[in-house]
Length: 400
Image 1 (cartoon, rainbow, N blue to C red):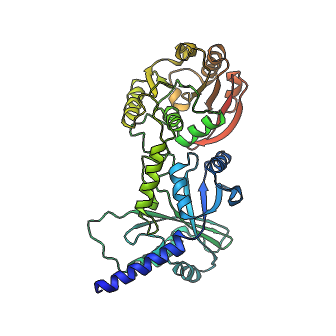
Image 2: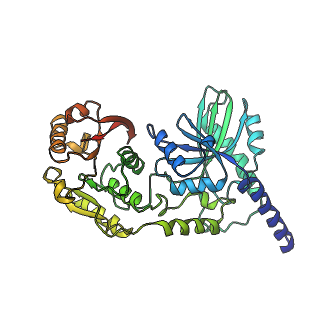
Image 3: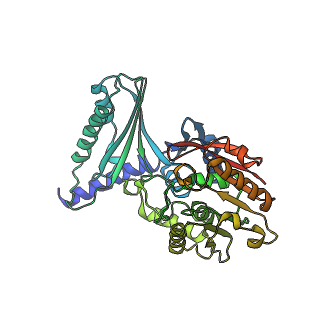
């Protein structure tokens, strides 16, 4: 292709991107863990997003916005798992119709031409129910389109992953594109982790439910990898949860690196520097302490987070923050992590006694593997059902 033709083609392509992808509103879906939809809804409202453009639905929050808002939410929301961009909805009860509908989508506007396609297919009560066959048909049509666009790809170029979600319900297909990539709870901070680390979105939800604010002292006395401490530090400093990581949307044709760098620069200017210890993390495990020290020092939280080796039952909060009450968050070992310590009932009973004796007036959040653990603690807590590591567990939240 002569250079003048290529430039003309490139210019018209960019105009199509601006008109159809950047300039228009699209439907998006913020996928949430069970129990966290309302937290996500509140987060989005707190960001100034109009309530009339939000709908709480099964599995998450549907919202209508421009691509820029989707990018901003990936960077700034702490509670959801991922954000999907809705591409198309149609009826199909045969593979021939499915292929026609998929081929009618202008995929070159949505996907980088040199990408590795992945598919997540879910079917419910549809004539087309074989997920692998659906994925194969979709991949064939999309790949043919992208190849036909004629981009020259270098052999050693790394292909970015792009995941397409296909939902078929009663022959109604919803096609979505994952804007996030690696799940949002992975903040890009915890390079070192201990066994069974708490997910960051759950830590945020518990801090949110406990009313944690920038003015609060936080004690994290069974810190493990320090999820509560690191999440609390990001909240206190106004550091966006996605600041240290990358996203799938960064290779989309509609993505502007210049605009995104400007957005990150603006958010970086708003990140606060706190040079006094306000978060106190401790554990009896040497490896946990080492992990957290490495993670805090690398991301500039060492001045804010105090890390020490201590047994929870030896902590006197009045010595840590004289005259100040705050928030204490506990993720006690349970299941296999409890082996050799004691049985669950007596262990939680001891935790409850310690909290009642020494943390009077503090707000508390405790991970509970079983509903009956609330009665073992002997504290007035509100139970919030959550899902973690394949288990249905509870967060107990309250004022001691």
